[in-house]
Length: 165
Image (cartoon, rainbow, N blue to C red):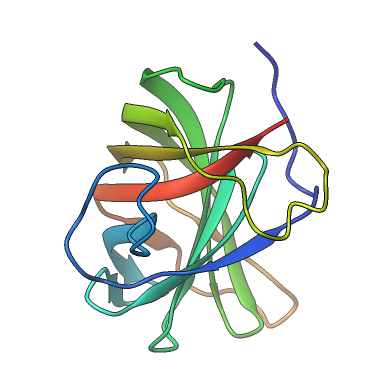
C-alpha cells in the first residue's frame, strides 16, 4: 500500500441531499458528509445539498448553502478495500483554513463507480466509499490573521467518490 498526496487533477460532482442509495448510482448521492463542527467554525453539514471535489483518495465536501468546506484524505486505501483507515481532515470558510485533524474512518463499502464524463482518457478508477469516522485531534487554524480557536469535528458519516490511479 502507498500514501498518495493530494494535488492531482480534481473533478467536480454535483450532488443532492436525497436519500442514500447504492454506490455508483446516477442520482447524485455519491457526495454526502454529515458532521457537526464546533469551536472555530460552528456548522452542521449534511442538511443542505453538497458538491464534491474529488481526487486520489481525497474528497472535498462543499455545502451549497455556503457553510464550511470539509476535505477528507483517506490514507493507504486501495480500490475495493474496506476496513479502518487513517484519514486527515481540513476545514475552510472563505479565506480561513484549519488543518491537522487526525481521524479514523471505517469504510464499509468501496465499489466501482462509472468513470466521470470528463475523464479525457486518463484512466481514472473511481470508487464510491461509504462509511463513518471520528477524529482524535482538532483542526488547528493556519493563517496570517492571528489565532482562532481550533475546530472540533464530531463523529461523521460519508458517501463519496474517490479516484484510484
